[in-house]
Amino acid sequence: MSTASEMDPTPDAADEIEAAWQRERPGTSTESIGIVTRVWQLAKLFGEDRRRVLLDSDVDSATLDLLSVLRRSSPPYSLTTRELARLTLVTAGAISQRVARAEREGLVERHTEPPGRSVYVTLTPAGHALVEQTVDRVLERELELVSGLSEEQRAQLASLLRVLLAEVQSRCDDHGVSHVGDVGTAL
Image (cartoon, rainbow, N blue to C red; front, side, top):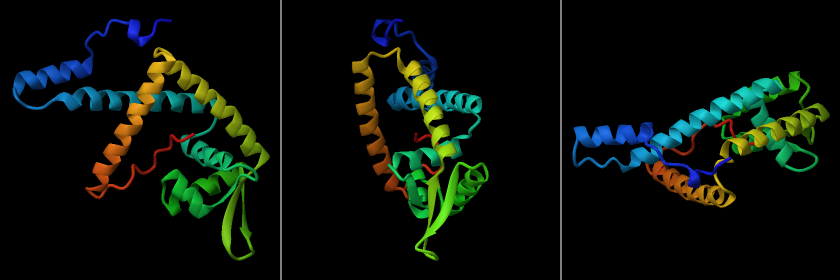
């Protein structure tokens, strides 16, 4: 398989959009189009592909997000509902619905510690098995999708995206946007 550096960078839809705006509105700054349009297109492609992989694994993205956060928390794979809401970037109501659904499916258990205090959610053996299997499938597929870039290019892109994300988050915070909401993509 050839890498992106070996491929001819033929114009794409973002280039066409940028050129059209430059033609129609000379002098208008259009350089963000090449970045933002491609990021949007990639987000849509990655999202749709992940939905397909999850459908094949018989799990939805919200449930996988919940199970993944628990799995990453280290043994005993247990967090409070408040911690889950914070780590999944969803509201307390949304996390309650996710936990209830996963509990009905036997993927998590709820308990209070000490009795009458904080509610903890713990990964069950079935939930652990499902998240292990699904994460492997998702990560293998996503590596396949980005394998057109060399290892060095992937590292550079990850670094640049980290910088861009921090900058965009900072600028959005300035306008009252604190987070993206239900991302459902954090393995």
